[in-house]
Length: 324
Image (cartoon, rainbow, N blue to C red; front, side, top):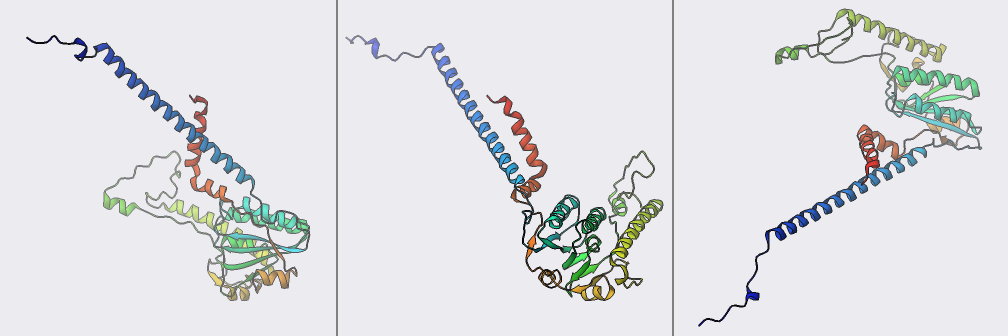
């Protein structure tokens, strides 16, 4: 005869409602934890962006020319002009002119020296700098010297002729008094590839110098007239700056470049000499104070990241009002 079973030892299956409630609770808790982690991460990212831009703004405000502080002792003030002369570049009018004006205005400066190493660039930027240099020389009645290291060509020479004297190394590259506009034509390549150019314009010459269309002789003549006019402006500035020192030949304004030795003989430059020599022997004040405006780390970062950084900041900071 079998013994009676103890019901307490028999496992009771969970009711369906209890199982569903437990599962839903687990899902809900997992969702809450995920939302909390996402909120924490968004907060960290936003605060990181905010801290980065606070630091960036602070560093931008620290930018000052090297010699902007008043130097009461007599000295030769120096400003570097290096690289491409263009709007937004280190050698732009907006960067060069504040440094030059500070150099002239400082009571301790006895002469201003432009240390040039540039192959040129924008005739507009070069023209603005040239005109302001001439104005500042008259306003402060201080001598201005240009000292060339490797290259002083095209727009850089446009700037240099504003100086009272130009000093070069015997192997420097000087000149390139000319103007150019370059580009490419892809019409033959397109024909070989079977690519059709579809250009729709309002205005007969709106597609001026389009590289994917055949060169229009009328447009070419128009552009040549413009270049010739700018070239003549360049020549006039050189003649005014160098005066009777120029020994003009048919090649002088042809766009050729010359060595420093040749430039001295042709009147494009005055003498051989470097910055130390000019400060010591010409300006007669051996101490050189650099007034060049230099980009700090923040400005280099801002330029490097550009619009991508700005877009990320706008998105991050713009969503701060919807924190949860």
